Length: 222
Image (cartoon, rainbow, N blue to C red; front, side):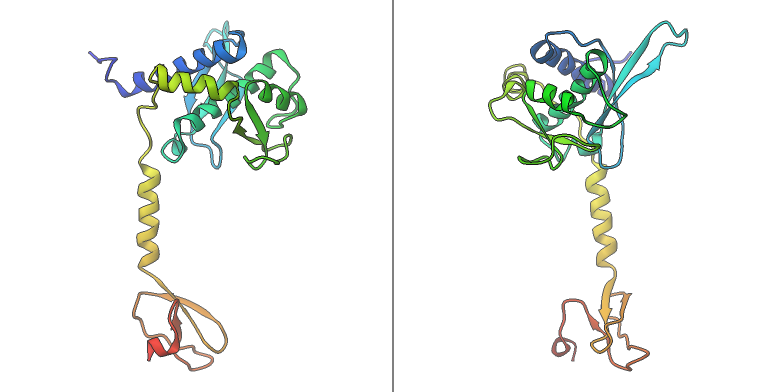
């Protein structure tokens, strides 16, 4: 029998559900309907919202999806990850109670709803960025509604993301090892490049000169 207190799946998803319910009450007056929260890896995205994505087999119940990308959990703070959850909750709010634009587009109404919960829309994720468009992120308003509520959830209620993905770090180390196994060589005359193992002696076939390894001078190679 699985111990729900130690089971990774239960701890992860019950925690995200707890956060959803908490922010629904604090920031949305508890008006948002339940949704299916998932973890999905989507390139360059912290998360996404998909309205009416799932239904029961009978078709009697249809629900929305909010997905969070676990590939970014390790590199971001818990507050930043939770701000992505709320970002997508704003999309859900607009889906049910507002007037969303085409899929993926962040319109003026959405930007206003974001500001109401203490997240400032920005295409760059920094102050001054464009607030509407196809790809719009946000930054957290200092002392805003989200910031205050999130502080309560983390510091007073002890919310944590129990697991972060290790593969991102492993892949980075693998790429670094592969990169270190090859050295770039350049012909000092024509500038043609070649790659080979470190300490390989290469000559340019056109100029008949010794090619220099990246980061060295002719004196260092002589």
